[in-house]
Amino acid sequence: MTDQMARLAGKRVLVTGGTTGIGRATVHQLVAAGARVLTFGRHRDTLDTALADAPAGPGSVIGLIADAATREGIDAVFAAVDERFGGIDILVANAALGADPLHEMPERDWRYVIDTNLTGYLASAQHAIERMQASGGGHLLFVSSISVHIKAVGESVYAATKGGINAFAETLRKEIADRNIKVSVIEPGSVGTDMQECSTDEQRDAIARHEMLHADEIAEAILFTLTRSERADVVTLRIEPRVQKTA
Image (cartoon, rainbow, N blue to C red; front, top):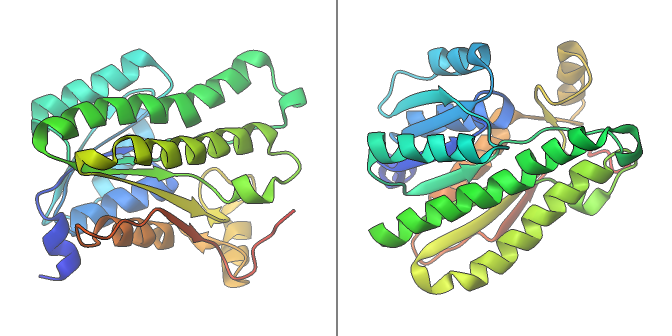
């Protein structure tokens, strides 16, 4: 057994938005490393596919339909965490939606993106912290984006949510430093996922040109972050393709 597998074996992990893209790749790698994973998404078809495609072990994965943007959805997810796992060791907050520029979106739509991309992270973290404190510690990992730094035209709403995640995580880390809970942020660059507007063939070509990464490469960075020693805390990890578009 590798050190990575030994450190994740039996861990109770919640992955939000684990039915597509980075989340799905992360779920699969966690299961392969021996973790006990619970994940959720909004759509039955993508959830069923993610569960069916998961490796046979040594870990396990269960899933449910829930919406990270709603209080009811998060409450239902953590009720399942308590029922199936009796607690949580690791939260990977990843559920996110893309967005158009603010002036091109109806208010109800950009509010929903914020509730998914930012409010859902805060709510998940609050529930996780309550349980981690009771069990002696844990790890909160938030998937953000390099859009925080690039600030590309067309990403005003999306960048706002990711910037909020970064500020939240950096401040939260100081607030709970004495509770044996790590806080990490992963900042992916361009990744070939369902969120991309281009076709699968265009994504494949971009990956071949080193302009995009595979979702599995971000999942590998997440597992690296989750498997450092107890004394080592990866605060922020930025990973992007060699030829990253910056505008």
